[in-house]
Image (cartoon, rainbow, N blue to C red):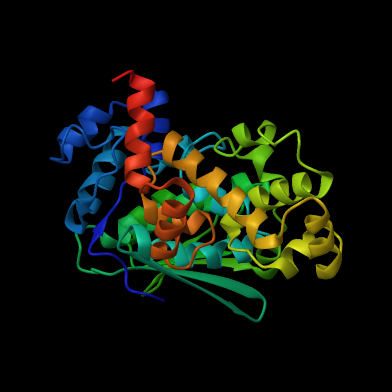
Length: 335
């Protein structure tokens, strides 16, 4: 488990989803003593200490006595959140959890570790600053968001065996309805799932199911051959899950590596060239349509090192991701 960041990046897409449901984001920012511009189109970072205050203000504004975490329900398939492509593009629930383990340290102070043992899958959540105000409450909120995303991707409610948390018994009883499972005393906030749920397959074709990817479904090059068309669709549907090898691509396309390479060559391409073309298309889409930072975009494109994405993007466009985003927004605004 890698160390979490010393600051955090609010998920602007999710907060915008809350706003569409009538939540007053300005009031939440004011109550949390945060900038009024926090939820605009620019990605911003905040000190870790403000994270607990922000979640507390959100619970106060949206939560109910029976469900303090009601704000979680604003997350749906149309939310432009970087977490959703990870979930929709993973093969199963266990793979998605492990992919989230890799992503969390890039965007905030929460770390997670997914461990399978016997007939259970345990997802442990910790804060890099465990003494932060309301640390246990923050992590329970994160657990609720995680299970919400899992349910969207798997198209069913995910009910854990139990939730372990150091939270007090009074609040534990209040949130049990949200989880549909007992919240029991534990030193580390942990989602405990049954093995049968860990192996739950996530239906394919993320480009149709995830609102963030759906606009890409009809953008294929009509002049491309059949193999390139199918390859592009496969990459869009899986790359945020971290799969970028030719062997994986061949398996998903129900062919052999040699046959895939031959067919791509016959259509004037090659595996790395075709992969780079789809990565560029996705990068330009994310930069134009979301507030995701370059590090988040790099992760969603399957890069292990953000610097590799930077170099690739500059080779593709002769500009940086930040400059590309700025120019696109200037074009849209007419400035």
